[in-house]
Image (cartoon, rainbow, N blue to C red; front, side, top):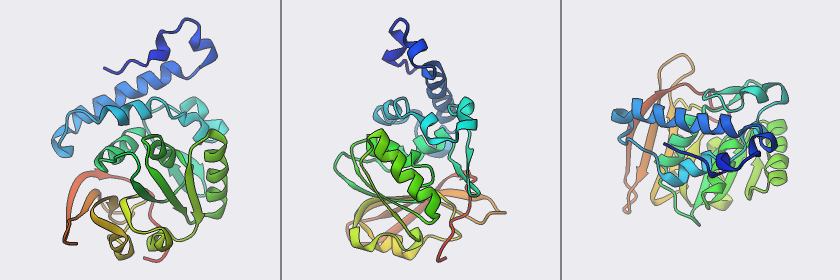
Length: 234
């Protein structure tokens, strides 16, 4: 059971109206991990990931009218036909990357910036690409305002970010019909990619792509998921 230290400070609830909601969210993520443990191959997520999930202010990454639902364990619309992902899925995808501080991570699909903030809070260097200019601009401003060190750009993430490659890890936050070859090419030997694969009207599978030291690639499916489709050069 995760108990945030801030919950124990008298009067903090008045100063931080989201404290109880964040605690409840951590408990719901833990419950989802237990429920899907056979599929995901673990009964608990990395404590560092859970710590970060309890610290990143999700309410800052949703539209004002959705803030009362910011810590619900579900996706929420952020405009332009896009969503902020379910917190359990954000936590799981972060955990599956098995990140170490100082590593270089490419995110395809900045969206609101929430996943990028979670990644940055683990101590990695995050490079994030967003194809929708309005979302990309808003996310960059939001991340900077909140103090998250994320390098962003507007562009087609299908093609990755060649100038910054190679990457220790790649995370894709929209469903692709197939694994984009440029992202595999930009992944370091020994690197990991986590990506939902499948069409918008079919079952999508959260997929792990691993490149070994010799450059050979293996994939394995983890969990059925539902993501908005990846747009761009598929």
